[in-house]
Image (tube, rainbow, N blue to C red):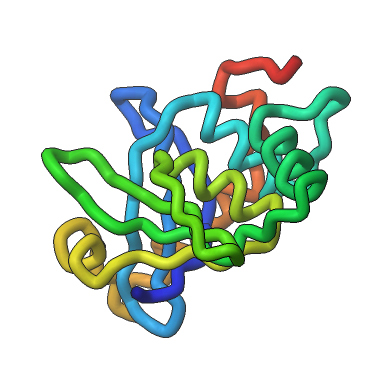
Length: 157
């Protein structure tokens, strides 16, 4: 498993489909995962440190984990089958729970939990971006700094 950082979310045009972009720590591969608008908003909220007036689902899940004394120790993106990514939530107790990567990432950002991607997933779906193309990634980061969760067309209530 290779550790991944969340670069951010954006809307892919012309399909208007949100993606989350992960970057391999200590490597040159990026992993784009297409996600739903609700999850994109949840990830963007967490990255921007925004706290909604009422807890979103991922905030609630974090609060429940704290209330029952469970610690999330890792999020693993484990597989890619027929264009669908799979992930696992790994708890300190040793319990592992299957999850959608978008939900797992949103929860990991709220709990400070590291995210890992399997070598197979990175081999299959990772995109190597050499240092000389880092300018494009920097432009993407600048775009992320200017976008807000409201740009995804969802409301949080």
